[in-house]
Image (cartoon, rainbow, N blue to C red; front, top):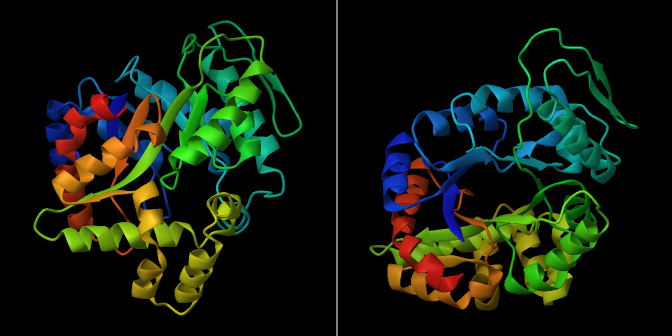
Length: 336
């Protein structure tokens, strides 16, 4: 397993790569762009993998995704991956202004259309035909050439996980994932999708986020921040199958009521000790190492991103959490 983290900025990023971090990822939101962040990663690292985890799949055309990757490949050949996420219904409809009704079917075609651009050789037409995308590009310039950049899908529930196995190179797990959710739901779904393919024998890749908050001087704050992050994620009904799988309906109902009331402390209090133990790595350094060892079965097989909480957490504290998580680098081989 490779240790990774969301890009913590240039200073911490350089220190992290020297400490053995082997992958950095970039998310995006209304105030930051995934590909601009990946450009910063490749400009200030030497060997680590780099890529969006995730980029909003429908915020750009397949052409735009592929062109950004070709541009970045010139600076970081062999180091890139692409993580795509379908985004929430309201983000697609209200933010991006794209049809939100069939995200699973559309993202499957997005993978195919992006690959059509990435795999195109010079002199070949770039062709793809589907319900969502029709490509027939005759690029009269020697700017192409096949790029085998892994494409991963952010997959939480079974349909998207099966689609990731069937159409992509692997899956990106959410920060909420537990050992049970990986082993009983996601991995079997990805494998079902992979068995339907006849174009590869490779095991699907697994990347995944792990909520990580370490602070030896104020461990209670780190634990509270991890609880708030878990609670904030669980306000979204998309994760209801996950909640039911674990039997956490009652505390989730409480945290959602607190969220509606604007009570962030109440949200954190509603997260039970069991939920915290199953999901997060937090507290003191010693407690975090113990938690990581206990969670050996809930870690992604290829890249685990030790992600600091972001809900109600300042940039300064996120950077401090990222730096503190470097102590876990040596513990990863034992835990994985």
